[in-house]
Image (cartoon, rainbow over all chains, first blue to last red; front, side, top):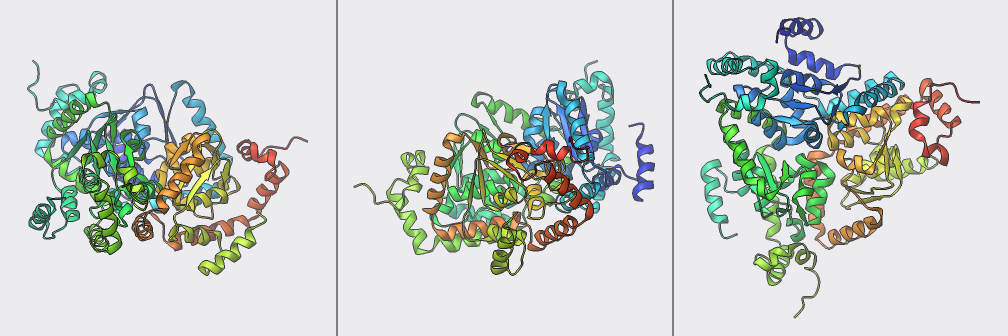
Length: 210
Length: 210
Length: 210
């Protein structure tokens, strides 16, 4: 959260637009091939960062995925709705976002959120070998394959921009601010709160224990 | 079958069009979040009703799915072709419809027809908890998330209308009427016939045992 | 490879265009329902042929899938990028093509590349029974269901043509020719080379053992 200004500056330099959504889409459209290796918890913009990578491999014992913005009254602002709907279809994308819940790597693989869940002990070796293998092939293929695939499966910039605008508008609403404050009081963005995030979010309307 | 007139009336009131397809699409586009909990057999328009819901969870021991209209010479008229193709891709959607066969919940999950197959003993508790969790989040998020997802993955009204028209035209053809009559003589829409529907449908051309 | 001229002639007769891509797309759009039964290795244009079929069932013990053109600097020319992206989504399609690796039938099923992986001993009986079942239903349903599904999930002809053109241009480049020659020297398109294709392709840049 503390680095949002930095990301927005980076985005403005690269894309002419100061939003994380445009920065992340820039990554999807880049000539670079990107592989995310996920061992821990990626949620909200963290999840959207790995969704912007070209491939995602996760540790089946430990990786956790979540797109919980709807618990605060918002649509995700960094492209999750665009990617998740195309990766897993209407019903699972609605479930994942509207539930604002955690999804483990095994279920994330079944839903298409990630390419594959792998044993943690083998994950790094797998991802490194894949990266080296791809890097050994001609860069012209990376560019052409990405262009042809993106032409089908990458949402246009204006759809990312629209999500970003909707997020920005809704996060400024009093109700959203109230829910975010309530979450912070309950431990949101502390280590303990993040480890129990699904129940913390499900409990925002309840009176808080003193 | 006996309630089609009633559904058509309901649809005309809600959508201005007297078709089940437009009623079902209305449900997809609604502000309400809908969760289908499926324990038994849902086929044809029954399957299309659950496909119109936002999410589908089914009992892995007992739930059965089928979209058998092609056995009578028809494309499904209530939106199944629209939903199934987007949920499971071209090859599996063609298989499911052209085979006119039954699919159990485990295979339906693998194909993306449903969100998840769960043990029957846990299904109701799961679906109820999910419904309560979602209901506790701001309604503005339900609306915005559905709008953004539907903009990507919900077919336009005219595609539902076209399927509905094709169904209506084909069901009036003599060949379709002959096959439906043959099915009824073999027990279609009786309890016994429904329990053995795949073989009943596969047998329509054979001489009937006296 | 030796039959490309023959295929191009066939394609020109059927579609007015002398490319495998247009021949394969013609198959997708055909009134015929096609079921691929795969027991061995299908890669490159072989994989694209089965991707052009309406359904794919494979032997879980023996079937292998690969789309390795990017190892030579090319995008697949016969429609694989179109089909794979729509069947398995952006991330898995990028992985499959950019890795130029082999995928076994079980993983191919999880990725949506094939409808189902089945035990080799049951595959033929399954595919034959499915073919007979579908053939027993009215041909008008085959045509209408395929039309409705293709309207959603089959790429337009010009996208196939574009992939074909990109393939044709890149295969004539000196770098691609060099890599193909290197592969041939290492056993590409011999029985032994095909059995170890992923490592052969990963090794094209290394000095060859004398």
